[in-house]
Amino acid sequence: MGRRSHDGRSQKFHPLDHQFGEETRDWRNSPSGHVRRSCIIFDFNQDHGMTWTPHAPLTREETLLSVRAGDLDALECTFDAQWYDLPDQFADEVMRTLGDVPADVLERRPRLTHLALLAQRRQAYARGDDDAVSRSFQLYVRAGLRSVRRLDRLSRLPDTLCAGTAAVVAHRSRRDYASSERVGAWLDARAQDAPHAALPWAAIRPAARPGWLSAQRGITAMLSGADDAAATLFSRAAEEAGDRPSAHYARVTATAHLALLGAYRGHHRLAWRHLERLADEPPFPDWVASAHMGADALASAQLAIDEGDPETARAILAEYEALAPHRPDLWAFHAHVLACYHAHYGDPLRGLREIDELRLLHGVVGRESDTFLGRVALRGEAKLLVRAGGAGRVLQLAHEHDPNDEWLSTHHAWAHLVLGETVEAISLASSALRRAPLSPNDALGLHVVNAVAHLRAGREDKARAWFQRALRLRATPRQVAPFLGMRPEERETLERLAGVSSLLPGGSTVVDHNVLGVALAERLSPRERVVLEALCEGCTAEQAAERFSVSINTVRTQIRHIYRKLGVTSRREAVAAARELGLVAA
Image (cartoon, rainbow, N blue to C red):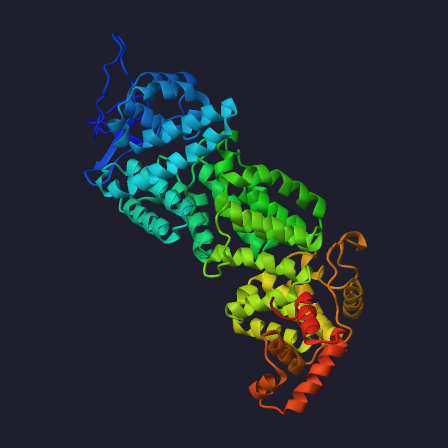
């Protein structure tokens, strides 16, 4: 950014030039005989405080001079320009300089507080002190929560954005997404009120951490289930981000989370495109990467699972284990990816145990469905239950919540299919496809359910039609996971009916459902199912007859049929068998 001299000639600002603004007088005298050179601070107006844009990147010697000079304004501006690179290279010097600054001064200067915490984290990482690395984030959260009360008292826009973005992260870490977004929206409005140049090529870009607020708001939106808002904010963050090597981090964060969002919803081409773009960007420094990355790893694992590559998925998930404690906000996506892996290539029972461990680790043991992340985790558990002989539990989950909710519709329909209830599976899948907009993954899964159900009912023409539509819904020809829930002989029959070659890579993919569900010799009729449920609730034959408005003899006949199909001779054995088979809830 330039300015005009009195004679109208353009003059360049340089970070080591100095102009005082609010609270810029050094709290410590300069060393004798040393002329301090500091960054320019361009004062917009009284309301919006100051910002600056450096003329050229600082050399290492200039950066070191700025850090050691003890000029807090210079240090702030250097941090604005170099972001993570400053504590990465000069953590010890930063801590020596800030260690002598009175606490009340740091409290009024949130950028310096942030810099001190980053430098402290860098030192802890160099020592191999994982506990101190983790504590640095908790200290950042505490600072963010404290800053909320004084945001409107900060007059300089860079300070407001730094403190406010910390508050956005802090509220999100407490799972208070509404407060996080309220602060983020307020900050955004404050930033938009700042004056901008009239010409687009002269527009003022935030000098400090460009795009970071939009990226953090995007994460909040994604975790609260606002996919449209998340995609918009991530795209905006990528556009707002600055140039490499030190102002591009918002673009890295946004692109990684866009990849995860795309992979989760089934937009494989989009997810791959984001991952390819991410590979072209310089990464975060190692010591801070764990706090911001991980979404890209989960996206890569999900894509490998969906494309029939369990070895790659297993390797990525093993590496993610070390990163997972630093990204607790992604726990539900981690659970879902684990579920997808174990449902087809691993052990469904082990998958259920690992998800329960994640719940306990992150304090979300309750199976809640009123939050987006709760539904993501429940979807994963439902997928595993269907594979592990727990179809009845999936039906119970569906009826405990709204059975018409689209988030569980695919696994709800599969549960009916596993229990041999083809009519119910077709009805549910067809209704869900008509009722609400679905993600590509859910729409594909429901088409597969209908194809299998019609095949089992002997309607090959309809089975072929649904299967062909399912093939057209694939994100790429490599997407095979939705077809791995079929029995191999059913998949081969549908491939033959549709006139396509094997869907699996090389003609086969190792699929291990691990737990073989106990099958009924003969399917229970819908009326026998409700009578069985009544028996499990403790009803006598007389009470069941009264409940269903039929004769006692009709109910006794149905009970005999139930005993024969379950291979039992008493009510107690029937109840136990029904629960073992997952026909009713325990």
